[in-house]
Image (cartoon, rainbow, N blue to C red):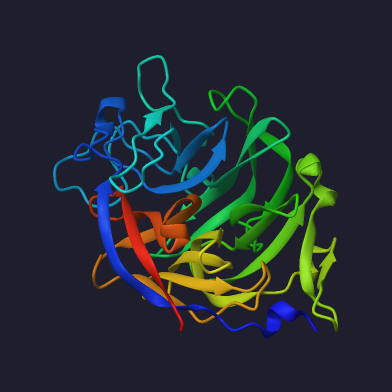
Length: 342
């Protein structure tokens, strides 16, 4: 038997959950309206070139007072900022990749045509082979809250430190697959991708690839269950992928936590709970029960809780994370203390 599978879960809950600062928008300390970011969302994070990179979704340069949700003028499908800020306790200082006008630059273009390609949203970034990559989803149509249609998912690549990006012809994943939105982490010298489908109403599956083969479609292996001794089984067939977390999962983030010596998964819970947190004994599980990280009752319209291992304190007991709020359609910086079982 896998000895990890016999270990007890350690996470009992969270406490001291609070907003630290606003990261984007005219009211943020970063005053991102100066680079035509009056409203944006997401804010997943990855490390490259000695910096932390913050990846944003649909971005608008001007918005009428009181405007709720995505919308406005100077629409870009995505934006990218970086930071060398090492103290998460008082917020994070951001510098955006900008164009010739000094506006936050759109990284990956889109048609911006409803029911064709409405937008292109980066879901996570990672570094490999001396390049930067963004996993993205091509959104065909935004539907009811928590639902949308996707054309496909793919990878964008930059070889000039994030200044310019190209969409790779391959690999891609179908828009109804379980790898439309992903979270990426390096595990044992390989890149692991935890994935969910379009929207916020599906479970989590897992795939991996050697960093040197990230652009080779046939190199990806999908978690297909465990052997009798508990070791993972991997398949080249995406159809063999097993669901490792069965929940209403959207916009997920998976990181290793030093305090718990466990994996942590945060995500938007489409079931209405708000932002949820789970503990994993291995990258494929078992995964513990969902714990409310931030309640939708406390922060209406919240979504996209993203973590990064470097942004912790007290040996990992305190975690920091981004959180998007539909009204005022901007990204905020939060913190929480993990409560361990005795």
